[in-house]
Length: 321
Image: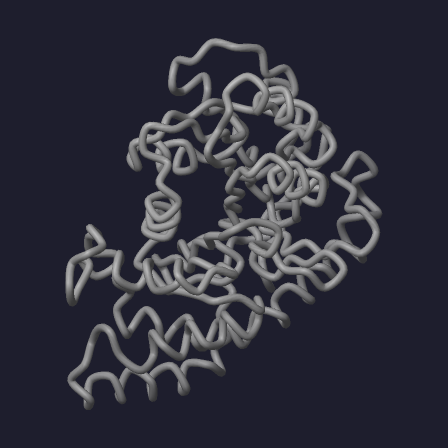
């Protein structure tokens, strides 16, 4: 399959009408379509939503709202460097947690051990490859019991669900990415989702230099109206794209790959990646082949993370590619 961005040609007329409206209104930022994108994402995820120019903006808003400066945040090493770097840039101290071999996501057992060792302020739970972390329930319960903030990195998880529950709903906040390769994309962009109304308001100030009163010391993480208009179109296509990917995985790929990552009952993956545990021809590579603790020069035994970097591959799975 060839890579294709999940965008339908028949949506071009709608998108161009949105862009024409933006140009005519002479409001290219902080306008109607940013609010509409947030509204549609809120309806889909059943959570308060704030659109930003990047995943990073949402992550930093959440980390600063929950005041991790000078505190430890636990993070899986099997993730993109954006996750631990967000902690570092927010003034926190990042410590790493091992993953499971079954789902490549955070290990509940290792997390509990690291909590006992590090007494963290927060935990980053990363949903890898499009599915929800298999131990999300246990991790959320552990964090609630210990009084720890739980943040979800949902950068891969568009359209995923587990018994109709959406990513970002296990923790105190979740952050999505709309980078060019994602299941739905706006080219660049991010969305913070949360059950905390005060965080919604904080993030809206944070993305705009803290205007109007500057009580929030934010920077520029605004999403422009042209990007938001793409998001408005894409949000309405998300179910269709995810359904197509799941059908293709079930009918075409699953029969070919016995050594694949297998989802638990009731879970739907957004299939950002189709992961197998055997070498294959024409692989798109690995989700991550360099553990973050290695990239940051950290010591420590994370055996499953290091195993995962060497023993999984991704089969091409692109929407109508």
